[in-house]
Amino acid sequence: MFSSVLDSLLYPYGTAQGDTKNPKSDDGTSPEIITIVPFTFYGKKYNSIYVNNNGVVSFGVNVSQYTPDPFPLNGGSPFVAPYWGDVDNVKGGEIFWRQTQDPAILDRCTKDINRYFPETPFTAVWALIATWDRVAYFGTASKKVNTFQAVLTTNLYISVIILNYADIQWTTGIASGGNARTGLGGTPAQAGFDSGDKTNFYNIPGSRTPQILNITQTSNVNKPGRWVFRVDDTVIGTSTEKIDCLE
Image 1 (spheres, rainbow, N blue to C red):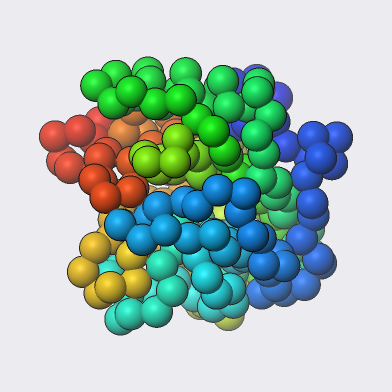
Image 2: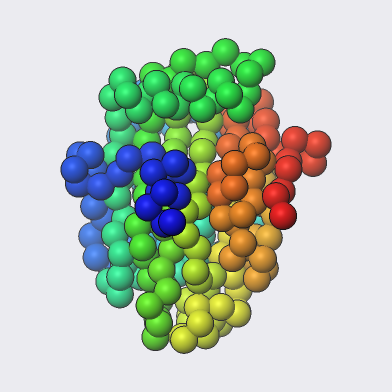
């Protein structure tokens, strides 16, 4: 069952795909990733991205914080949070990333975006794929792991993020008040994105509550475990009317 979820939901990842792995380091990060093309987020163009171990893709500076604050943040770096929580890849799992202009990946991005936003013509020219593969939580005394992914893609004018949740078993590390044996309790993980301007942001329903554990069953595009947003100057996919959270 898990393999079928991986095949249908997640974009290809791993060293065989040419991915780079983040170091084994609690609260660590990737090196600065200088993007081939700019990615526009809330009206600003960025060529510098970090894939942070604690479930965050940030623009301009890395993010080491492990307990999620509520959005909107009180200023700071703009970022996308597929699953902002206290990941510990020393205890288990890998964090992979690559930027790509591979035609097969761009074709998949293009088809997905055209399916979800049919009134917005889109042909992808670049993508960044970041995958947290079977990652453990800080202080774990269990075998619980999470697998999730962020895909950022653009046609140079329109920017889209795709957040994929294949398997979510824990919400909280012990430094955030979680239980070592269950990975639950305390301050649960946050999912969504924040502009860093104290105003513009989006929380995926269930963020920082126990319900975030069920994110594999929710969606705003009628595909359980997938959330998709246009995030350049126009932000689409966040209004109540457009969201369909599956039971």
